[in-house]
Image 1 (spheres, rainbow, N blue to C red):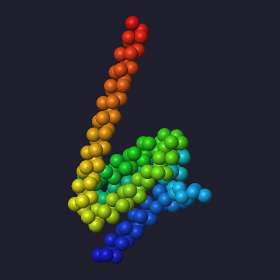
Image 2 (tube, rainbow, N blue to C red):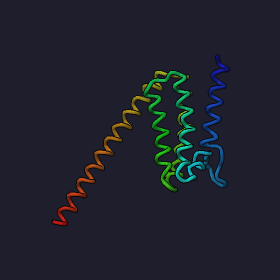
Image 3 (tube, rainbow, N blue to C red):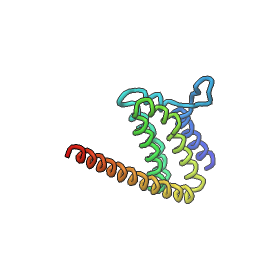
Image 4 (cartoon, one colour):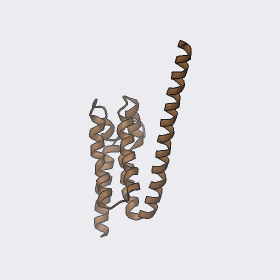
Length: 155
């Protein structure tokens, strides 16, 4: 059983390393992988990287991970794809975010301490949801304020 676990850990960490951490910018400690390089392809690069990242989500499903863990992994992937799609800034974000390494580590944690991983994931998913709702409410408030201001200037 240990050999199987080590093989699984090794294979998903190898993929994560290739995607997020394989190369170093000369003269720095900044590491990056194929994911930010794919992101340089206009229009499709980040989506291709996101599709490859779904491997970790499928591995979690095969381990019968709870929804909270899978949502946490999906949030990591979606942030990588959506923010990564922003020209230049997205590539910088991709280099630092390393969603695949985060998800590979989540798979390891799931194997070692499933209850703790599920509890942490539940908290993180709820915090993300609250922040997303706060962001939407804040944007709606800002749009409303801008409309009222523009109308008052015209009238």
